Amino acid sequence: MPQRAQNTPVCRDCDGFATAAITTGTRNGDGSRATLTVTCPACKGTGSLRASRTQEVTV
Image (cartoon, rainbow, N blue to C red):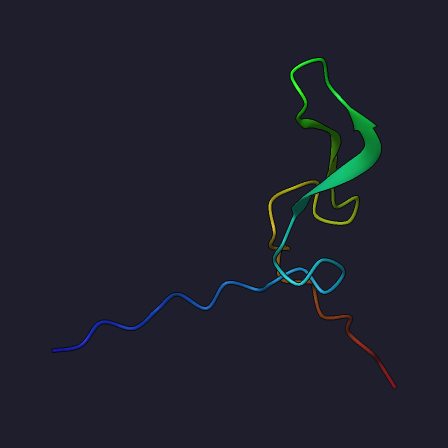
């Protein structure tokens, strides 16, 4: 019997790629590029968000 994948909501801001390495344009002493690691502020680096609560509307 096949197993189903869990339905995990993906962050809409980073599309699941929660951490990015950005080059600064400079090089380290060994010749490698200097990079900054930046995390998504919406999901705080997890790549997924909690399911949002639905708001009740009374009429």
